Length: 238
Image (tube, rainbow, N blue to C red; front, top):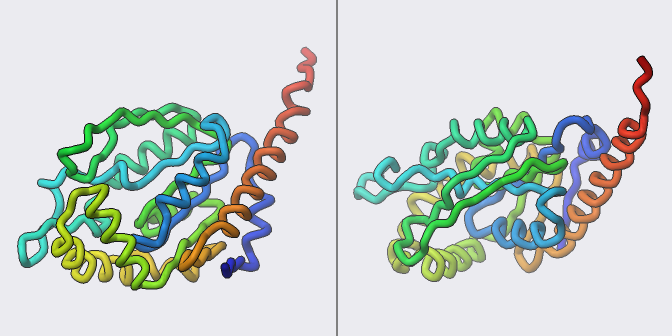
């Protein structure tokens, strides 16, 4: 599986302050495999080491979403996200504060929303369609990862996800992909591929990319711990 690195990434990998969290951004088109990638990454680290915040938990209510010419709500626009609240919560995490919010269930009446709690951590991952498009968040990111997949594969994955997890009919899924998903990807997501530090092609598997990121995060956490240890043992002489 191809894995591409930008030349400038090494310098930012080794940079950063031990007094503030290290931010990693992960984006890609709908159906590229972001959710599965994040799920696997979360399994590798305890919450006190790694905090993952998803844009999906910041969708506005259905009645606040813009409608297209056919009257169908478009959830694939940056405006569909409560950007102000997302920015606020990112700032709180950066300040070392815990945030709590209600889970977004994608208008699925069969799913009961839970309460999500996010604790500050040395490494914070921000994931979602528009996390690179939101300027304030893009500027905060220390490492930018783009997950890419062929268009036909993304369509198939979207169909499976929306029918099973979100209870959407097939006709609705295909219409939204053609008229909402693709235009949003081309305008708000794809342009950031060339601005990313790492591009992971997930046409078959993202395993190699996951191993690389996992290894880097372990190294980063070890570096932060090693840098803090001398400071914690230093005596203050009055």
